[in-house]
Image (cartoon, rainbow, N blue to C red; front, side, top):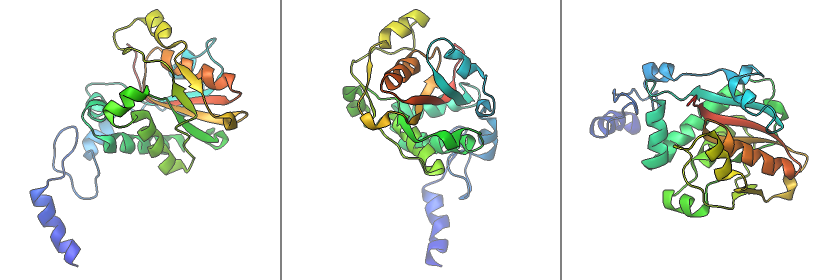
Length: 229
């Protein structure tokens, strides 16, 4: 009873606001108001085998399934959320978005074939500077919903690579072609779900997939957002 009386006072001095529009949130809503939540541009790619993300890997890497939860859109507030967890020390946002990815994946017909989740790694120095790997946080959110294990050390980034943002398709591929290495022999003959935040040309994801495939694994891909640019 004391807790129920205290809750409105805590809410008064520490308001619980939507991370996108700033609207005051009721206690039943976690990070986004209902309107901003509904505005997130879901792709529904997990329901369709030949979706635009899956087509990226045709002839490039033997990927079993591929999906992205949302379209990368500024107007929906998704870009703002991604910026918050990548550059503003908001790991809670990444974990929450990972849970939304998990709920979507549970609607797919192929999640039951996955053995474990592998996040795309950061270079150790970059991860130390940021304090966490955002792909691992997304993977942990997915794991919370799906109950699949996460293997954050199955893959490592051997080379520091400059940002992909301003590079063209060829430049992106050359930047990461030999940057990743599979470390865990237990992944052989297992079906892995590779997780990352944003996929554009697929160069980084392809390099990760090839490293895991060379280690004898099967690979599917799930990214938070798909960017056409």
